[in-house]
Length: 405
Image (cartoon, rainbow, N blue to C red; front, side, top):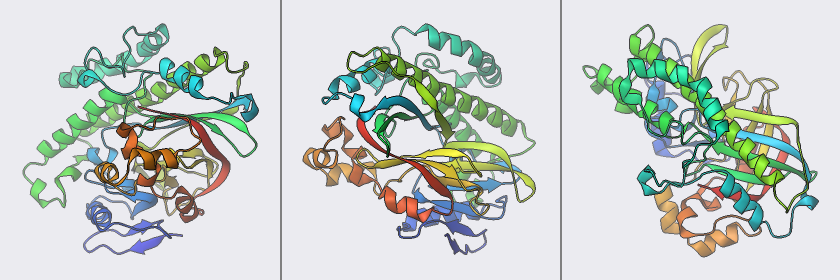
């Protein structure tokens, strides 16, 4: 169940945080959002809620007549994809290093050369599969650039079907009956980042005469009916499509690579294919009204909707089915949620700590991934208990291979 907080001169905040701490800074951000004059009914905070830029990650922001670009963020359309395979855990080799290497070879990941021409996280020679998908995306992109030429990004094609950095990942997992799953987490890459950053700054400029009256400048917004509102909605919708294609292409690359591996028998995918955004905005109907719903680190959990809630590199992940909770605007958490900043994790933990926390998992165990170590995240089991009225667990997954950017 949720806890309801009254906000002075604002709408209420309903938070699913039973058994979990709510940081003062996170509550302050939630309160700032709740004070915006166009909030519809209340703001919903998921159990993985934590401090973000302008607004908290792990929040559901329903609005009427306005949209806040920073609430959507810069990783527009970031989300998860999961597929169930016909493989069993017994089909996996004892040494999973070659499996991890096959995935890393199939999917560009990470970032080098400051994102320049030698960046390992982009394609050197773009595969035909990518160019064919780009043909479907190009018309919408050209329409956006015609209005805003500064949104042109050099890696719009070379990053299509690539993982990125940070908390983005690819995993091989086993479920409760030893079925093998492939799950991945990524978004709209550099082109989406540019769209998000551009419109966040444009919203601030639009409100320059009154921005000092906002509780936080990063909550600058566009009003429905204005040209910039319409341009932003068009661009963010396109970036969400790009993100979905990005995940689909990566999954195809991974499946092809594993099917071509000498370490595995031939396999196929079952009908269990799940794809869900968790940084996005959509028009939806709630309480009989059409509104805009921004989910910043939250997943749609309408009645029967399938979603993915990952833990950390050393914890379990969950395939869930939505219960259609009206109070949460039919939403649930997008993961365990960070328990501390990346900088704090690097200060607090060593590679030896990380190795112990990821024992038995084929993954990177070097200093560069300490900020993603399991201890930097909340306990996903507590997170799941806190939202038992929002979702039911369909499958419980435990990773055996993890690829980080």
